[in-house]
Structures are given as C-alpha cells and as structure tokens.
Picture 1 (cartoon, one colour):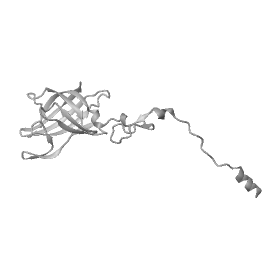
Picture 2 (cartoon, helix red, strand yellow):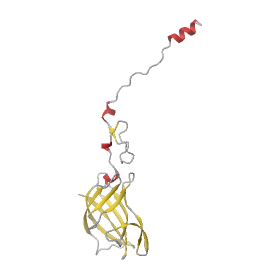
Picture 3 (cartoon, helix red, strand yellow):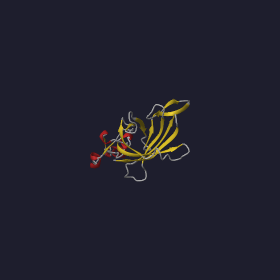
Picture 4 (cartoon, helix red, strand yellow):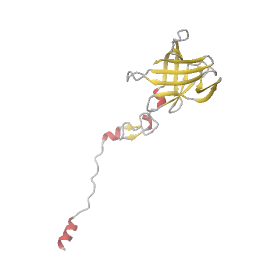
Length: 183
C-alpha cells in the first residue's frame, strides 16, 4: 500500500510546454475565399482577402485581336477576315467579365471558370429566326454568340488569349478564331 501511495504521489500531471512561434506564419498571408483562383495558396499563415485574385482578374486588360472567320465547313473567309479589334476586358464581379470594343454598341458578357482558366459566353435559350440556339445576342440582334476565351497555355508567362466563337446569324454560321495579344 505504501508503494501505491508513493507511486501516485510521485507522478505529476503533464503540461505542454509553450510552443515556439514560427515567424514565417506571422508574415505569410493567404487567400481564404473559395471563389478565388489562389484559394488557400500559402496556407498556413494569416487569412488576408487583399491577396485574393479571381477568375475575371485573369482576363483583365487591353488586347489586340485579329479576327479570322471560318464558315461551317471550316473554309477561311478571306473577304471578311483579318479585321483587327482593340478589345478591353473588364471584370464585372468575381467571375463575370465584359468585353468592349468588338461590337460597336454593346458589350459581350462572359463567365470565367476558376479552375480551367476559360471564360464562356453567357448564354440564354433564344430563338434565332426558326433555329433554336444557345447563346447571347452578338453585335446584331439577328446574331447569336456562343464560345470561349482561353488563357494561352503555350507559354506560362504569356498573357495572350485564344478566342473561339461560334456565331449563328440569319446569313449562316461562322466561327471567329484567333489570338488576342495583351497590350
């Protein structure tokens, strides 16, 4: 019995020592917004929404786009191609962006994806003459646009965009393709 009493009286409850602070955690900031492209990059650290950038920010800027137009049979339309546009891509929220400069009187609306670095033409179900088409009105109300804008993946430092649009109009179907070079 004396042994048991001595055993329990000699034991002391364990207490954790104070942890050493890591100075890197005091300096490192990370984005804690799941809608951001850089969500949780740099974790652990201090959550800071000012370091976040969003899908629409990836496309922001002024670009020079030389339009190449193809018919539905993939025939190059030399008469209407090679027109150069200066377009401005303006974020309109975290994932939505407006494209000014392609159509004279209106902006085109696209939604950017956080993972794939692709922006898709916002679409609604429309009736184009007698043809049902998904897309948004293009430069004329008779035209319907669908398609994508993709960040160039050929060079990690490139800020260029690949444009691939399908336009259904009262005169037929055309494809607008080309590279938009950041100015």
